[in-house]
Length: 112
Image 1 (cartoon, helix red, strand yellow):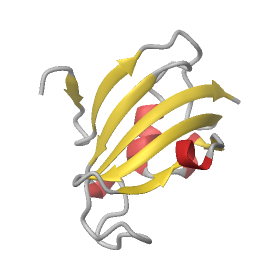
Image 2: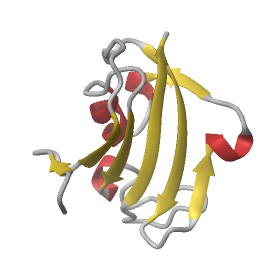
Image 3: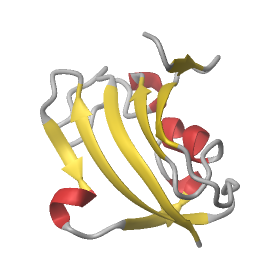
């Protein structure tokens, strides 16, 4: 698709908004807002719906997020297409079935 960048890992992303803040490293923590869906559009997690941004270490989340966050500037909003091998793989988790490609809209609010 036009505007979608495909990385060697299999991660794909589309830049929705470009920020000009700092880029986090793997050792940093970040504050984000995000909306996660399965490929069929069903929502499995959303900080927007909770009304509360999420804070976590860049190196402490699924591999697809760890890779993408290090490419993003604070203030950016990207749509990530995360293949199952960079997400929850053959196990799945909660309402996410095994081998699921995940779609996230991720807004990087701050590098902490």
